[in-house]
Figure 1 (cartoon, rainbow, N blue to C red):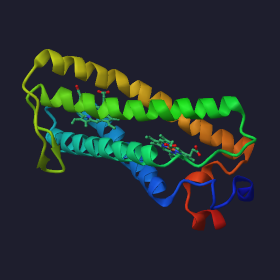
Figure 2 (figure 1 turned 60 degrees about the vertical axis):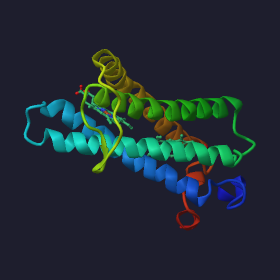
Figure 3 (figure 1 turned 45 degrees about the horizontal axis):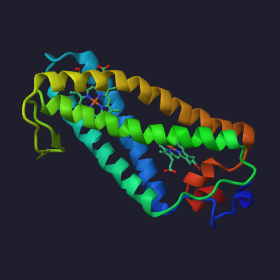
Length: 187
Ligand code: HEM
Ligand code: HEM
């Protein structure tokens, strides 16, 4: 299968792109459950501030990683897809990737504005970040977008994963291998 995508030549994201991708995935799959926990435990719960602290810190880390990935993408073209990939598959994958980048900028930025403009501290694992001047109405708008935006996060992550399953289970075209190191692909 892998030979078809030009193994190790054009068919695979390079090591830094792969590292950034899997780090982002790890950080995002940590940030989201932390958001669910703080939403369900209530502000009065004794450890609320601890979960908020980590949700905000991991969320800001997600933003830094997404920016790093966009910079990488600006500098290097992603590896070309195999030439038998259908136009609609390329279009769908591309649109999903664009929306993933967008929503993972919108989420941390609205989270930051919601917290900071309502007078709450935002830190990056203890390193205090500059805050916006207090503005309750801006904070409320940002919070509304943050809360509603989570459904777009679920939708696009689901679409991304369905796309991967489609390629792995039905197309069997080595698509997942594009984001995996050579050592794993060699197994
Ligand atoms: C990848 C980035 C992020 C994602 C996917 C995300 C997702 C979520 C989710 C799913 C919730 C629970 C919503 C609910 O049902 O009530 C939440 C709540 C919250 N998030 Fe984020 N978040 C991110 C980044 C941030 C950042 C960077 C901050 C602040 C610096 C932040 C601040 C908050 C706050 C304060 C809440 C509680 C809102 C409330 O209860 O009214 N988030 N987030
Ligand atoms: C278990 C979870 C995940 C799996 C199995 C997975 C798998 C993959 C694979 C195989 C690709 C390569 C697609 C191609 O060849 O064009 C890819 C690309 C991508 N993934 Fe994921 N992914 C996961 C989680 C995530 C998460 C959480 C994000 C959130 C930001 C994400 C965002 C992206 C983006 C934006 C691309 C396109 C990269 C580019 O060309 O710039 N993925 N993913």
